Length: 297
Image (tube, rainbow, N blue to C red):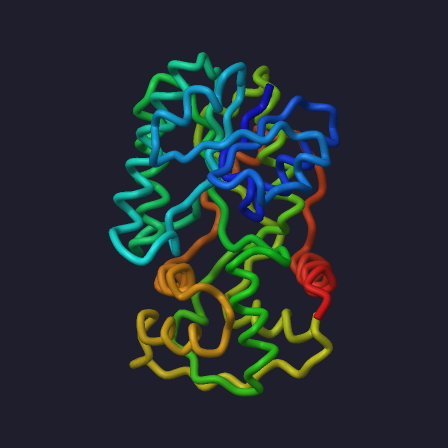
């Protein structure tokens, strides 16, 4: 059986559905399982669990051989420190997985380091790896899909602003990845015979900049690329404030995401992707078109 914690999230929901439709026995774990009737209809067994309430994890992980940890604390509640919450959740999950006899934990973090958000994602992986269960630690840059907060941020910027003042982070390199590729990569970890208990950096075939991604998204929307005036004094922290004004993305999520954009997020070790089953990866322009079509506005 496969357990997916964070099943009501965007990637978690797609993964749980993908595994169930592929014939796997899937337990979808969520704080509010009643909000995921679509997963139940797809054949998932819904189980209530909260990584910050360790007593809920044991019963929810019962029978699982592989357990996905696909939760993050950004935007969750209005107080406290999201990095501390992520650490507590990971610690609780690692202990519960070991007690339940889980054979592999699978975690999706981010490429790069240097911001509070990116550092927290990596620290979460380290906490999971400190437990008794081997961890497949995936690291990705921006996920391109209709429900991805990274995609939604740039989508609404391009839709609503014909011109924008941008900071220097728009020149930073990144390697986005289509959500379908993320799901396929994660699903491969259910095969316990594959040597995936390591760091696995994953990305799409195209390396671009954040400014370049804005321009490509404009083309996917059949719009002219927005006029960008780059100024050195507009820090990621300040730019996250105006992003919150012009996009519907939760400011508790948008702010740490934007603050992480001043750090390069590209694959530096291709060995992780080489360990995964070989297949073509979706080009960025196609991923953006499919995401725009899925938004359907």
